[in-house]
Length: 402
Image (tube, rainbow, N blue to C red):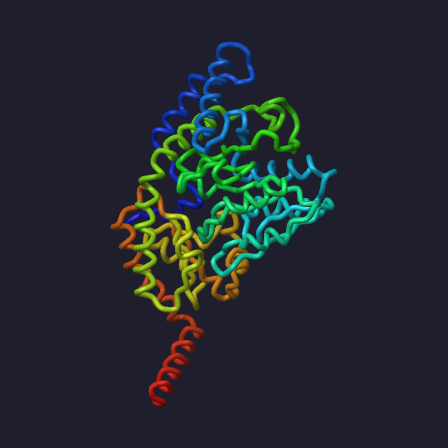
């Protein structure tokens, strides 16, 4: 049986070069980078080199990079840290209704501490309206947090414009770029971003390591305590193997993005076209053009997404119904609901996310097996039978009136 992995927005396979590179810092250069002896100095050199690679990839300065355990911690540190540091100036935060839960849940926890949060709505494509942002800003606003690209539907936000609006009001912009790094170019200066979250395992690096970019001049307090690492902004012994792997992975991603983005976009469009031509009652979720090059998100009416995933898995295809962090939940996607989809249609969503190793043959295989899966599952749905009968009746009436 074929084994096809199309869940790259959940995680990616660690690149072979990255994995080999990391072993050196587990077995040879294993010192604590905070130690002053030669073992520690060698480990510190690896950390410094990785910091430079990350900074170069996003147009930042090395001392603006703070290593974390991943994107979730980076988002928490940015949102909570900026909120606490600026509490005397204001208590209002603006975010969107389709953010990753790393941001949404952090904002909800801050609301319980007396902060006020505005959750901007999105249009039918999952796009934030810049006019809504302008109207939401008050003299008490201390942070705007809008993701660069949505992890479920792939819609790319107008971050450059959003950043310009925030900067014009003297408000820092935090952006979760966990899904966009390695898939599309990201430059913090061009995009007017002041804080940015990164997670290595989304671009062929190891799990359990990420970083936060924080522009010089942004006020932020630490949210964990216990050491002076990362200039007292994030304490704890540094994960040297992970940091080294992150550095190499982002360096390779920055080089290959110009080639990979158009390649994956061609596969994406091939799959969207092929699936929608062969299956009826299907809706494309997300912006048709302003979307990540590897993201295919479709809703199939009259089908439960979980049944669809299990059936695809039996055919050797790994996919998801949305965010990997909420895949165990029975609730429909908060992103799709925010975009105006009904609970019924949102429950039937499928996310296929491509990677550098996927081929046209694999894309065609999915296009081939998916219609039969959908047909079999819909055959068990009384709602589907009723809809087909109703559409047939309506068609006959139209013909008789001609």
